[in-house]
Length: 92
Image 1 (cartoon, rainbow, N blue to C red):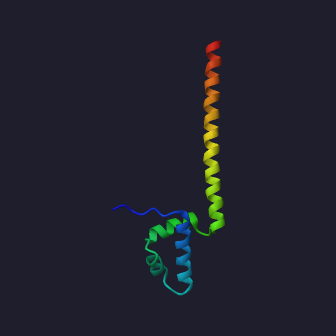
Image 2: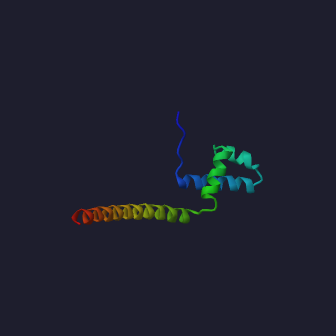
Image 3: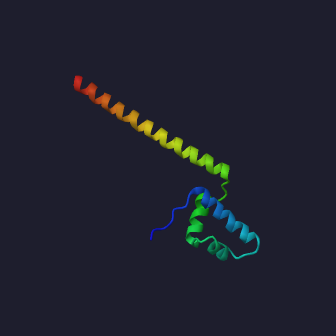
């Protein structure tokens, strides 16, 4: 049986649930168990997504997508430049 992959919005929701339960007086370890994750997962998620709201999460997704698009464009242009440089060397 493979582990479930949580989506970023689900992760933020679970982090909020834990924070809410802790504010209600429940022990952090117990609150983590209630959302069905391990403490290690909680710490990793908190490090990565802690403090993000849903609007910030959407902005992060948009920026990652834009970054991937730009990286692809740079790699294409670099390849074109190398091909042209080789073509110039062959002519001389």
